[in-house]
Image (cartoon, rainbow, N blue to C red; front, side, top):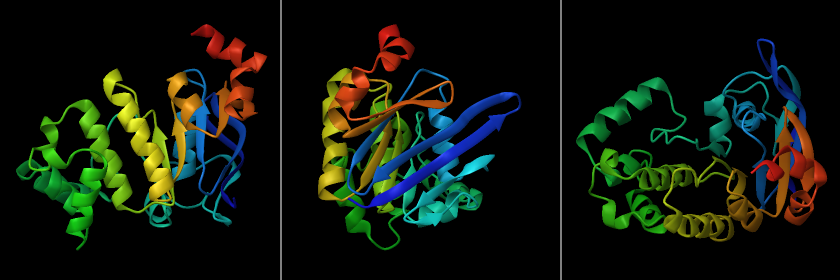
Amino acid sequence: MSLLLDVRQVRKRYGGVLANDGVSLQVREGEIAGLIGPNGSGKSTLFGAICGVFPIDGGDVVFEGTSISHMRVGPIARRGLVRTYQQTRIYGEMSCMENMRISSRAAQGNVLSLLQLKARGHERHAEDLLAFVGLFEKRFEMAGRLSFGQQKLLEFAMALMSEPKLLLLDEPTAGINPTLINGLVDRLQRANKELGVTLLVIEHNMRVIMNLAQHITCLAHGCVLASGAPEEVRNDPRVLDAYLGAQ
């Protein structure tokens, strides 16, 4: 598999706090990679650095062989690198004016009309994606009336509307009813296999990430603590001490 994302010694500081201290990781095309670590270890900060939410203080982020460290969210997303959040952001990474337009329509519309705003002439594709994530029966309901888990599925569908090459998911199972988690994991795996979307997933549910990812990186105190196959990371004494053993 060819290298899709190459994060090289990324540093990000917030005041006196070094949130990412020389973090490096790689994601290969077609794989599902995992990112774990205790709260405050720098995982979400790293996602923001990769996706252009803020400028990094050192290092480089390379996507498909091109440095994107100097780019912001919009241009990076148009290259095929898209992110979801711990808390659902139905309107995604768009301009303020587009968000206002979509917010206005969403207030008067339903799940299907909201997704079709991103369809740009491919309304049937919007319906297909709602069926793919299990929301087709909810297509005429107001998005704000969906459960938290269903809103996450809608955000997932909207991210897939962009036909991303690499999708970064920040705790996709957080806040979801345990009975629905297996269905969500199945859809992530299908998006990877059937739609060809490479995934990088932050996840605190160890059962989920150990069964989902082919390669896992563990952060602690802003640094890479361990990286490798799930079993290697699960059995690494440093990971057990810093993270898994504390659960």
